[in-house]
Amino acid sequence: MSSHPNAYDLLKPIIHLSASSLSIEAKLDGMLQTISGAFGSDRCLLLKPDKIIEKGFLSHLARDKKPLWVEEGSSFQGGGVLPEEEDFLRPSFACIPLCDETSFQGILYIGFSKKRNFPPEEVDLFLLIAKEMGAAIRNAH
Image (cartoon, rainbow, N blue to C red):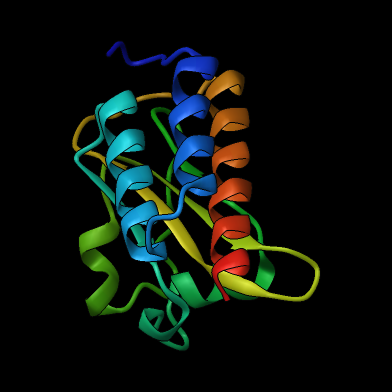
């Protein structure tokens, strides 16, 4: 696929997986593979709450519940990055907390080995996908 996936072509399999009778692990694995393939990422992971280390940059994202976009032309200050988190620092990456007003399900991480931009359409897609992934996790519980 191109570096700018068609929203419908990406959201259709994500929603189909979310509504399927598969286990939550199979749903999430399928979603992550779909995202990675659509965007051509090098890494696409769901960082579960129990794997996020206190005092690191990921724990700050989880607490603040705000996405982080590191793209071409921007710089990541890297404050609070623990040695265990250094592998997540790529030339470009996004971390999107999966949460609602009352719960936190993890962080959607997508990383790229080359610098790239996240156009507004892609940001919107990532945010919609994160909402759907969060909903799938909540529904499974």
